[in-house]
Length: 479
Image 1 (cartoon, rainbow, N blue to C red):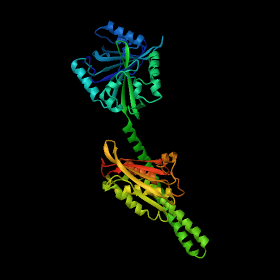
Image 2 (spheres, rainbow, N blue to C red):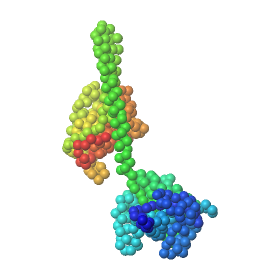
Image 3 (cartoon, one colour):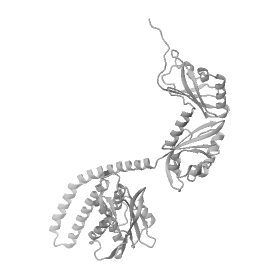
């Protein structure tokens, strides 16, 4: 014969309820808990007890009348055969109304209550001071009450500059002008739009730059006064990586499609080329028809080159870094483009400050970069002109870098063209696929640098490239 003995409820539990102002349960999330006292329609306060029930009732009254949150330790029996369990009781308002007030209550067990002794205060300060994310507290007037060191690093302000300032200094327009209204509306209506809901927003640093952040806001009260704490996470690096992954997926799909298309088309192109070669032999005495056959051959070659360029653009970039003098690269490519300059009077002017521009690069890929840029500059200069290459010391983040500017005095470009020049398949030439500068952009990004185009103020165009002196990761495949 056995007897049922009361049992403990080991392990963490988290229960949630939505209650009315008289603590009657409207809905619950008490999974795997068979407790009639915690069912819908029951009064939650009847199921819990504290060392001072009168005080607890007073706290509940403050919650239902003024919205002051409750944090207390209570005792509740979750099942008929269990021992009473100590749980942390947290209550907060969901909706205020004359007869429609709703309140969220959570009960959790298995977690050590936080003490308020000196050791706990020291630990809490250590958490704030070492947190990677920015943690900011403001009052109901939107004035900054406290910040942690991460806030200084993220936004560029000193703590003393922020304390007492309006939180909107960390926001761009139009949020800067509207934020006080948002907070005032919440305090008046108690209808949250962001509290308890994390979302992506835009932050503004002291220098005016804007950047993406994730913001999570919570509310608490001290002596009846509401305060709000925001945890801000910088999403700049995360979004950069996400864009890279998305771009890699798109390029992989393009590469797979083009490879298959080129494979299936190769036999057809070869048959067409063979037929044109045989036809050309029969048309030796008919110059007009022979010219048409040659044009058809050129079109087939252009189609094959298009397949290869698209496949090259979509393929992963494998870089093998070694130290190299960048000046030797553009001088070499200038000589290699002698055929493109034939019959033209175009001069290359080397206006660099230093005779040696040593950077760690993939020489083959940077040759490709310089060849594309110089070829475009030659095309822009038409019959005659000057192409000037200059270089100066620069910074890539916190690392030393070289900034190279290649300027021509040719036909120039509009700002609209400059904004689109690195987009795949965009071209202003009658011939070409529009992938040359898109490939150049990928190569520079894979080197950890950047490239930009802009109209030259005196006519012509400028291409600016930034090369890090040293690379963080050597000999890696870059998407």
